Image (cartoon, rainbow, N blue to C red; front, side, top):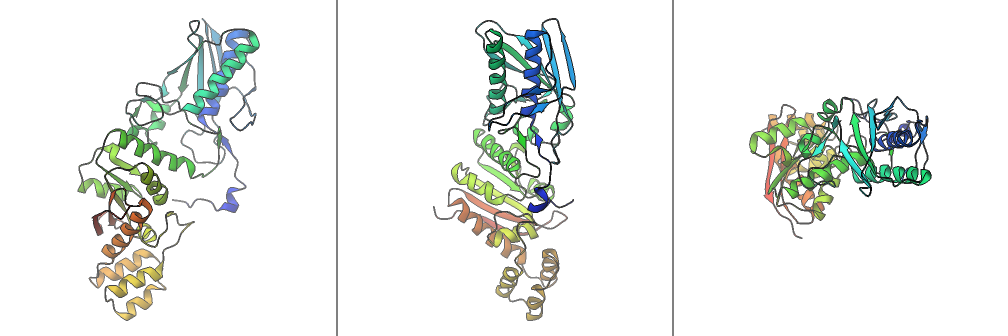
Length: 370
């Protein structure tokens, strides 16, 4: 897997547009055509921070009281699963006084579990995109002297398949992707989208009254935890590198128990007090690993070599050959650091896995001081 670009490299990357911005542009074009018979192309919208981007139409159709407009989503240089997707808006007039109503077309998910910002049974169109589309309809309606009652159906071609590569199945969003975005703009390789997904996963787990969740750095550690605990899928949080962000959110929105699972290198960073475990933003603290080996009465030659070792896994391998429980020591230190961040609001255990998914260290559940 390639590394994320550095801060300097990211400054040169091209920004893109969220699914919410594309759906809003498609809505504005389709509603204008519904009222006037003509599609504006390009169509201009206003984003929450005042930007006014223009979007070229990729598809348009008008007839039988329905107007359809489509925008190809451009995520810029971000590796977004929805980059290149066709976002379609179908507009019909609504009953007088009904306001704006949203429907999920093909490829847009439906919410089936509580805890998300959208109610169960509603299309997975988030609050900000709903507001942007409603405001666009209202502005166009006012311009043409009509009431602004409209039924908006959003369609995403291929959205069902795209959703398999998102958190939606785990969050109880079925049938397609979500229409997302708070600013309308995609910033390449932004951490905010991932952290927001972590928050929504915790929200759904809380709404489901789960007593125990598991947060893992990747698929190998998640599979390892699944072998140890019979937890429902919704209990698993794809933490990735954002241990600190997850724990801070749990501090404000706690659950009873948390299992943290991860590789030796990642969790040795948490043991050293790093909340961000990404290789570009934190490094393995070889001095800490040497300190832990001193406590395990490792040979002096090994301790000296640790400080110049190539990788954390090389250090783990040396410890295992000597029968030293370095994995347990890292797990205990990582758990204690996690308890500090969580400020004693939940019980935490840490399980360390090797690259094959075998547990190589464990710190049992404990609860720190509040």
